[in-house]
Image 1: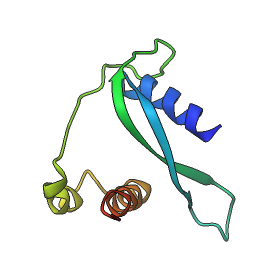
Image 2: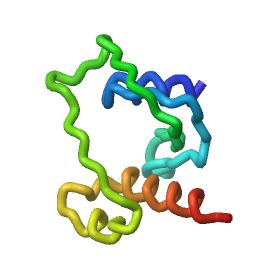
Image 3: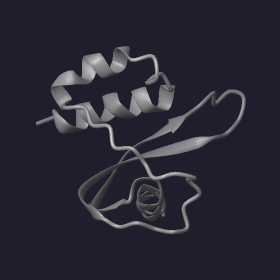
Image 4: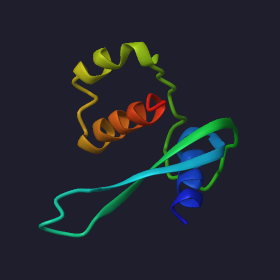
Length: 98
């Protein structure tokens, strides 16, 4: 499932896994040209879980941004990948829908 794949990737790439996974939306890059779906999964209730099967050559560096600094994050030159921006905005909408 998308949720189990997301949790595996999360553990491989960050050293954390999630007790709760919530499907938010499927993102499609250039749907008129090729089929590539990215399921956006919100992971919460994290715990440490490192998987040795990851392909990262070095340990991850944790960079955190408080939600009240999202505008600053969106202005960073190194935060420009469209799926990351769309994912961030969809997560913010999900968190603030109440």
